[in-house]
Length: 358
Image (cartoon, rainbow, N blue to C red; front, side, top):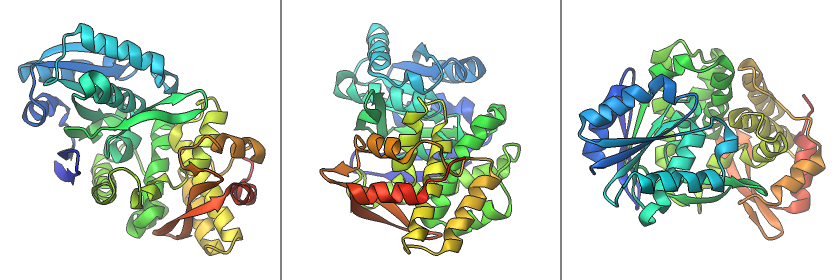
């Protein structure tokens, strides 16, 4: 098992990445969070697979455990689902010293994390990610949110977990399509600042039956995110680079009514931005071509059939908009990006330059 230490102004915590460490959640929660009661939150896909193991570990660590199972899918990231979860937490009698345990992918992590951030003005949460996307990205860094009709992740809070436990063995039970979707965030980290990771993905696509390599990939990505979050917890500077591929990607995701997975949308958004940057002279053509090839090699979308105007209008509600400008993350080279503030019309041009139908 590998341990990555994260240090933020709000809270320091450890991310434990291993193979077969799911049964240690209770021990970790007891040490990192304490408390008497635990609310185990999962979804309708994950709870039947791993709920009993985690519940047993929590009971073994001395917790009185309650459970809440939400419907699987992005459609559960709503204010009404959050309200229902908060009512369940209150009915279970959790107090300010107790803990929420989030067992699942990004939707569960966001929803459970947001509930912990708001219940009694903040109780502790332990993140137990079960998708590759959640392991490498959403479980670390403290971003929690739900979606609004106007757009994705528009209501939320920064709330750092007390601990993160990632067991890569669970990735074997992901559907191949969900595993592929998760790789979109991994590719992002390679383009963002890890040329060795990108070269590795270029040389050999990820395989969900290779837990040793997956453990190495997760640790590497968590270390990259840790360094960024430690430096900029609340996304006022360098943390904005983690939005690479997300502005266009979120628009694609919302336009699909969340039928296309988040990682797939990030991959498509990344390719669109890379092509636009190449056509604007911000990066070499070969840089964009390499990104598109790696995305295609992992069988992820390299573009979108959503019209430019629809993507642009969706982006107007994005959190990265500031008045008549919006912050984008431009690709300069593999391993080098920069945040740029562009006018809304220039952003429309970038979408048009980079968008290719698939």
